[in-house]
Length: 324
Image (tube, rainbow, N blue to C red; front, side, top):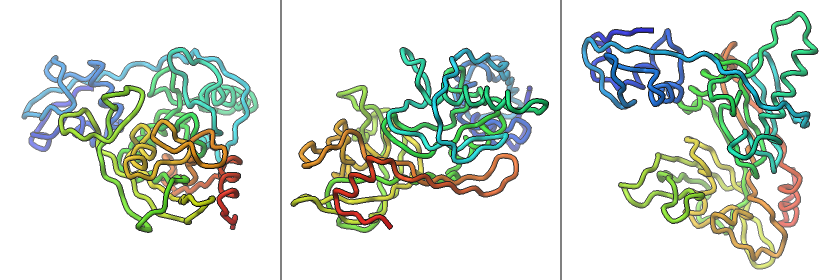
């Protein structure tokens, strides 16, 4: 596609202008990916996503062909909360990585979803069964957003590229709502609040993320809203069952923000949780329990909830929580 800039596009960012273009219908994150790959040029020259457009700039856009998926489909049970021709909502268990990465090519949610998609196609003879979106490449088919390996709960998977673009844009526009439950250390002074602190790589430990202290550090804005659901105790120590809403979706965002706020999530030893609890916690007590978005095809507002994992419920029981 070629687009020539008129007065309406002057001084707009390249990625923002293309994200608003009605014919393209591409998410801003995918547009940035195409720009980085050199698939989007201006007057035959590569530009950054932040480039400000000028009158008569000619934008060339090349959308590459879909890549064949070569990952192994594996018969791994899935807790599918909802499914139709466009998407799946899955309650991901703990100890499951969402997608393959270098050195990890099996046992992931993607391997399980590929098998499920194959079986659905076999069962639906004579129908047009979609597969999975390939916007995020061959290692992440269908994956619109992620959960950490040890975080349980709801994740949405796109079964075609149109659905993927719509869901990704809703996450970007913050109309897709994601709520988590967590058990944090300590007693909160306030019943609710928000943490608005940028997050980047920890300069001392590259596998960790951290709240960016220096303005020169490479970081991205991050906003987490929290609400205390219940004050809990064990022995002489205080804990809190909290609800967190993600306004942005940075790596380890809730874990980093709660640690910075001096209320780390119990079991999150990477981010300074205490090991002296008096009970056994083997992973961060974090669960993606509620998800809502607009259906990509029907525009119907959809709401989903997933029950807490068994170990999460067990810890709550130790802390005196009464299940309602």
